[in-house]
Image (cartoon, rainbow, N blue to C red; front, side):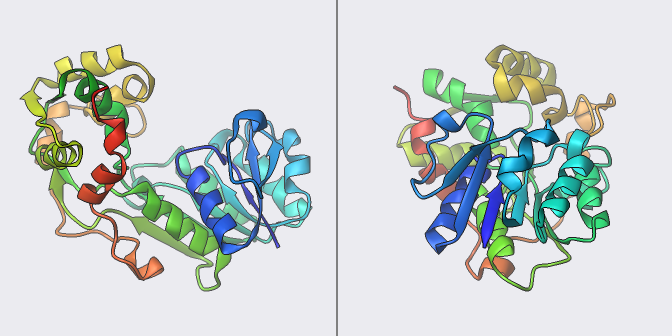
Length: 288
């Protein structure tokens, strides 16, 4: 059985490939840049682009199961091509925002395309990624040992990317996951202030937390570029999930649940904490 991983060099796809290879599965990894993929040596690496469904012919040949990175613009064509090629199961990287009803035009259309195909499906719906803090806070911690944040006491249940990959690999390899949407979060409600403390402990250096206004934080993120700039308005509450204007002060008024679903029921292992994540990524924050 060959399993195709699309978006194979992404933050989750790469981890999924590693887990599948360790399991002994036959893994085909699709990427736009095979020459720089740097994946395990037994991986069959092929070139392809989800934005161009016609480029998937080689990647889909002989594939029975597939991990689908979300590209809503071409989801129906990609799923149709997969079905025609003989794919029988698709595991979708989706979002907890679908469960909450906030996402109606990005991840949801991908889920719908897969479900309507008649193929076996599983949706993996992570919430906030712990990994986001590398892109948001990493530059200022590395250069100044400081985090500038407008809402230091706002808390949520961020999830370790390794937990997402573990659940995805299980859904691809095992029976019993078909027709299920898994919401994935971290095991603890943790504030930005305590996240900074965890990173500080992981790198063994004190990190100063400076409270700024949402507008000031937005300018900081925009200057950083990359993920921080691209997502500044949404992450800071200036726009909602669909890109409509919203009030950043509403972030503080959000009603928090006591707990949210984690990976543990699927993997049989406790979900990873933010402190563990900080240790795993200490080098991403350590000053040069």
